[in-house]
Length: 149
Ligand code: DQA
Image (cartoon, rainbow, N blue to C red; front, top):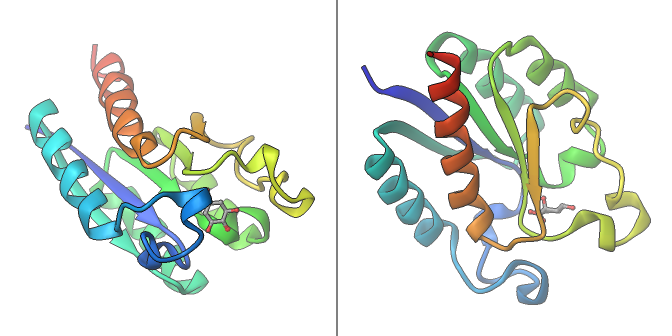
């Protein structure tokens, strides 16, 4: 059976392509989603791709993921820097988690340089643009394959 992964996108990522192109590039979330599905299919992963602007909804999605998914890739966007609730929900998920950021948060404003989730995730990708999504899928596939060895 294929491993199941979920890519969770936080607030304002629905406006990729429109917001701050200098940070986030011109790709839309829809296009990104298509590329993620193509890569996942190629690697034999079943993918769910979600976005929400609501913190509580993201917490619910993360909680529910522990029953249905083998790995989480998360771009928590602004909630990365503020949400203890999202951190706590991720901490309950006892399987691989990849933290993802399109921009290099450590090169930006001071308030973005702190991630509340970095110390509880398996690994992270930042500053590589929207390609980071594809790299995260490749890494997740390897993590899950090694787990099942
Ligand atoms: C982001 C970085 C966050 O600081 C910001 O709030 C975002 C996107 C990124 O992908 O680079 O919305 O997570």
